[in-house]
Length: 171
Image 1 (cartoon, rainbow, N blue to C red):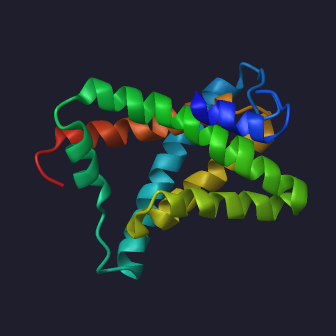
Image 2 (image 1 turned 90 degrees about the vertical axis):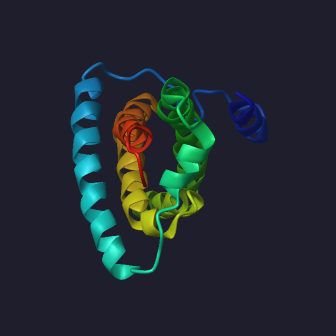
């Protein structure tokens, strides 16, 4: 909530609608489910490619998630699959992409906002897959003119990962 307040305040009298929190057509929900599944598959392939490009890079996300949430699967699901998508879509699509799309061609804004999204997750091995996820989420926002479908994709994308990480005995 603080992030939303701060970003709206920075836009000098902006509203939540200015950040992309708008109504959307209902048919975006089944589209979001399909896009989430396809994005999950694409990111898996891209992670394999990234492992070949950066063979010495480690995926520190698993250990970090286990350290942060331990055996609190319900808490992890709430944070990673509800709160994080809401906050990250506000920041990366509503604010970053929204600003970039005003100052450069939309194609560049999509690619650059995706790179910022991937880079700020801070795991080299996940940069390429998360860059692609950021691009997909920016395209969802652009197409739907609302953050809600992207939040749905983001949440559905994060959900199986957080369950897999906390259900496994090792990273």
